[in-house]
Length: 449
Image 1 (cartoon, rainbow, N blue to C red):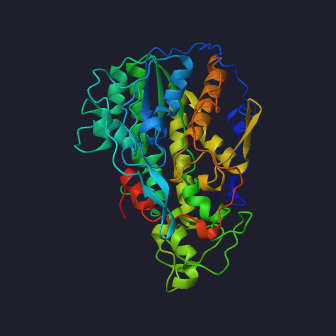
Image 2: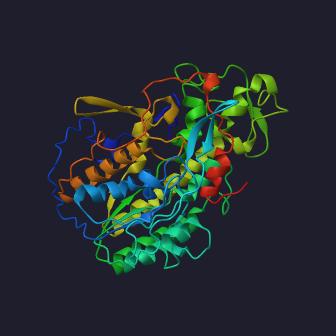
Image 3: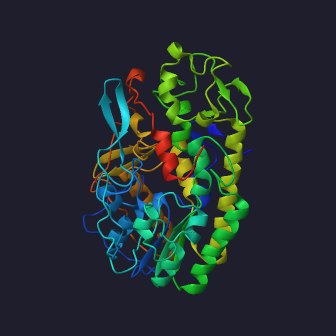
């Protein structure tokens, strides 16, 4: 079993140095017009294959200014490359989440309205082909012909992500897939092969075929990222680590005020331990548990769909390891540059980082945004706009070291992002109502109970 989250905040021994480099974001003082040297990289025609993390989803929705700050769009702007995305107006598709004041207090709700695609008539192939919710199977098989789907907006029935990437004759391809082969289980709280997860026996030939197609049918440089530990995202860990959680003390240490009981994946009922994770949507019923009795007895446990018990966490971590093993072996086989995003996310969870720019310190971590974390948006899964700047700069660091490029970092201060006061603790009674968040995320990831 892998080392678990120390103090339920970070994973041990998973620093960026394990990837062979030290992320240099601790002192980012860049000139207003930096010189860009791309080394052996050619950004003439960029293509991006991926899912919500490369599409630019923020707060559970795709569209608006946050989409224009997807990590590949930020990189393209930094190197002066043309970059066309399937743009959508705010509030996005699906509509982004926001905090709202209701009669019951703070709640996470959908922004009113629905976004509209703005360039579906674009004659060429989009540079960013990433489809939110796409699994490794979807990347190889979904051509966007399903009416009413988000992939229809992006792929337009003109071929799969891989097929369109190849057809664009790219000079460089960014690949970030495999996340959703596991993430659906973390979002739904239930591990079910073929329903909430893609078995590694299916993932392996899909990822192998992806890299093989790019290597044999293009001359592009390939930059590929592995996937983060899905059990380390705030959606999973927050109620065991957050400052304002009903299961932690004021310092964010697991310290439930009473004995809580959970329903495990096997249907058994037992006491909650620090090795289990109660998912973010359980925050509201837990906050009123003393009145309703929710979770306080074996007869009324926290249901399995709101919990990842220790066995499920171990299972998901093993699945992430297996997916990353396939990504890393295939990337090596075709000579791709590998970005160890798994290590970056673990570093953020373990040790808050300070980025200094223009004399201002930006304290960033992987906590849920309402508790001062600047990198994860209010859906508990996707980065904030500033989080995508961090991701883009990490890609830049890896590319610079691997290819001799000298691409400067993207400026935090010049990028619009959601910023909370670091370390600010929201009173428990002011915690937002997360009702509906899980169903919305499950819809994005195409999973059902």
